[in-house]
Image 1: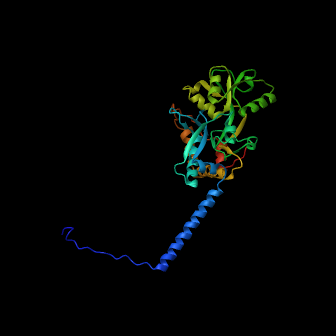
Image 2: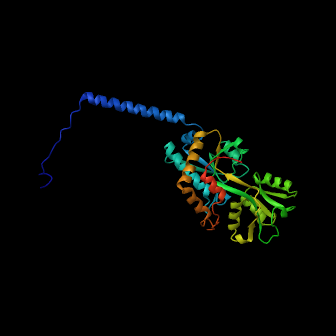
Length: 318
């Protein structure tokens, strides 16, 4: 049978009861108004950083350029690292909370000298690095729960005669401008009646270069970053890290203070990563596997201090 011969069937559209139809329309109208009011109230409830992100459709992450493996630039000049990956998880949470699937992510280079100013003046919304959570800094900025714990130690050349910080008395030591290691080294010098000549670099790369080119006999900084710099020279055995520890420091993400709504989404995301075990996978990716750009493996297991921080997440500073 062709389509021309096929019988045609017509279905009469049902007649709507005018009263029911009007009632349904009224319900839809009430529902629409309720949703509009709720959406308006939700929008009005946004404050601080979340409101800024919602209004601009973008978030600015502060990153370092040479703090391997926490935050640095890869061979394509893109920000990568342990802290950067955690920040990306936070960005995903913000996308959901604010219903902005196409949230634009911008990166702002920062260093130890300007990072706090760039947070307080609104240039960057969230610093993704290894900044130490200090009580003194909490007067200016806020911190997330701890995502890493670093130990402040000194690296020397393997063929050097130095066995402790004391043995470096009178020698030039490389430091990074504005780092917490500076007052700690001074305190150590006073307590142990020794003196150190200080040589300053603006960031990790510059300070390590001062040490590597023998303008300094040692470089005092976070142990994991010292290990990463040594590994990335291609000859890690040419260096060694002294046993002396000036202090253990909780590292955290940094953002503007007095912004409880933003802090909640940051902390909730990190705690969620900890409880699910995903943060350990992120850690393994950057500390226990070959990483770009040179595919160097730091072989830096999770420390006892970091395990304790994961067991009881907190934002306590020192």
